[in-house]
Length: 252
Image 1: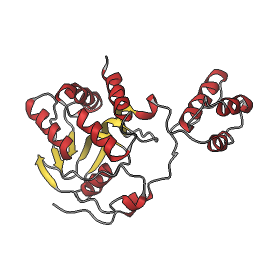
Image 2: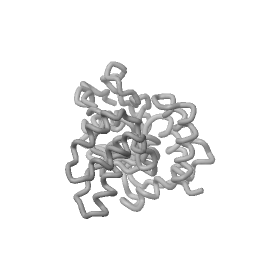
Image 3: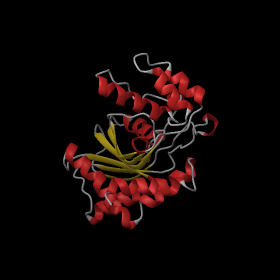
């Protein structure tokens, strides 16, 4: 079984008993960090080497950061630039605004080399709302530095970014959250140059169940007939406006 298919199997096995939220990500993170899955992390770093070589600046956080530091020391992965490990507890896997901490405190746990005025690669096990990377980036900006690109094993966000690279994107392998017929019909209303009757029939029969699936199938139709494709991953959930409201971050 190849690595990407193995991640898919892990995700689907966890999903059978844990539909989402913090518990899902906790179980996923624990699974990724098991010794038998170290090759998954090595594969992720191979993507970094292809993009930047070995001389890049690395930032990691929390328990996953502990594992990365161990693998660096053991020689499983390599980084010839500056290395920064910061505290954990920066992640928010909730979508309810009242459950999200407004201030994410960033504390340096270990640093190797100069971390001022540097472009960093942020590596994490999973990505959902982006609060961890956002907090670290704001902290780095105080030093004249920034996160240039993010690399993760699992990406559970429904919007893709050229600056976020994942081994496994949930919405590439799954159709997304099931929506009501009315929600799907409202989404269908946005597209005028498709055979609406055919798509309506499939929605009513339950053959199309999510907005991601609907968009992908619209794109398949457009590909066959030379139409202009749509952005499958444009924002479906509301924007995380709270990201703009973080007020301060700790200095080291």
